[in-house]
Amino acid sequence: MSGEPRAALLVTCFNDTLFPDVGRATVTVLERLGCEVAFPAAQTCCGQMHGNSGAHEEGLALAARAVRVFAEEPAVVCPSASCVGWLRETAPRLAAEAGEDDLVAGLEQLGGRLFELTEFLCDHLGVEDVGAFFPHRVAYHPTCHSLRGLKLGERPLRLLRAVGGLDLAEVDDEDCCGFGGTFAVKNADVSTAMLADKMAAVRATGAEVCTAVDSSCLMQIGGGLGRARAGVRTMHLAEILACER
Image 1: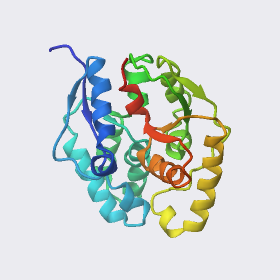
Image 2: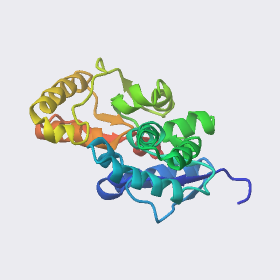
Image 3: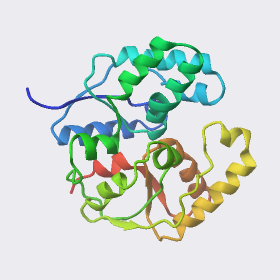
């Protein structure tokens, strides 16, 4: 239908491989709001994992691919604050340090059209109530990239507060969950200790569900809660917003 806002989905390799329902939920929410959603099939990993692990050349090559794949899209939406942060902030800095001026320009151009999901909903579409219904007590975990990197602030919380039936629990903890990509592998003991603190904060709320805007952090938290048999499940924010009565 002509006149519809168009958005291309950058689903991320993490969601595509491990949490495909997050991508489906993102499409559901966007289409419910009247968006035409495109999915460029040539997309791959954005390069964040490589770049954050020190493989800068490989990471920048994948970032350059993202620039090419999404070159013609007026807006790109991604349900991952960490991947958006890599493409908008870290990759351009590394490209500048490597003297890749053309890539810097391409990343900056992409960055102006690239939105984390809650940014796109609240800022680009100007919507907070997406017509969702989710009658459960929910705890929100502000991931490091969303809180300190993209500075999403209240956007995720405003969206959650507008969900019908949802009881939003306040989590008295804004610390890292301990995942940090390969940090959890290289520093397992520290990561586990950080996770224990996060789990305690979530469980103290009495929430049935823990949500966030990064599937990677939810995998870390969900794994810990599952092993502890805490009775708390994890869901990406997009999955909650996709629920209807």
